[in-house]
Amino acid sequence: MSDYRAGDFARAVAGLREVAAAEPRHTPAHYHLGLALHQSGRIDEGIAHYRRLLERQPDYLDAWINLGDLCGKADQAESAIAAWQEARRLDPESVLVLNNLGITRHNTGRPEEALEYFRQAAAIDPDRADLWVWLGNIQLGLGKHGLAEKAYRQALRLNPDDAQVRNNRAVALGNLGRIEESIAEYRATLVCNAHLADGLNNLALALHKRHDSAEAEALLRRCTERHPDYALGWANLGMVLQGIGKLDEAVQVIDRALERMPNQSGWLWNQSLARLTLGDFTRGWQDFERRYAADRG
Image (cartoon, rainbow, N blue to C red; front, side):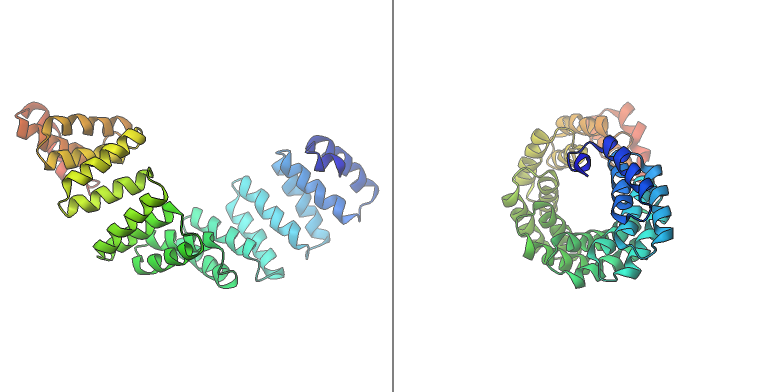
């Protein structure tokens, strides 16, 4: 165990194998051997070891949890879920297990199931902000904007300085048509983190829709200066510049966006309109048909 505590997992595996072989019923040795295999990156061996251990001791909660972790690292999502379901059978109120199940179900494209796990976890431990953030993010992705906004509000009650959560709540508020509240929340986002790319970009878009183009332009220039690889910032700066008649710069700025994220039909179409207005018919007509593209949005 001293090798394990010292972080020398290769030696820990060798030593724990000797103990486990000499004392087959020494459960802690078997459990820590599985941990040492995990830590040393020997994932398949760790999975096989925990399965053998659980055949002998099917009610070993921590072994089921660790088996799930190992299966997750091996990209065996369904096996991980099966292991955590066994852990849940032994401890139905384990927030750790419910959280793991929620994350894995989300990552495997089953958001409604993920929501149920996070709801149960948040009911057991309502003071964990990350659970409310997961609830908000999944519900936002499902278009359940009212529920997302409420979840983000709970998360901010626990962690009011989380700029990304404030930004996401502002998105939900905007989708609910609560525009002034949304703009106020974006401003609060930038108080928490003055240079958050999403916050700068999204506040600029909200202001642009309200015809506050000067502030929108200033915010997007700040966004692209601070985050030169953030393609959305360049694309939206191009849109704002186009709207106020700075067409030459708009074309150049949209090029910057397309360098970072090529073949975006909506951006190419906007750029084509600017080029046509400038009299560049050859390149303007080239992308004008993008207006029919399914991904133009």
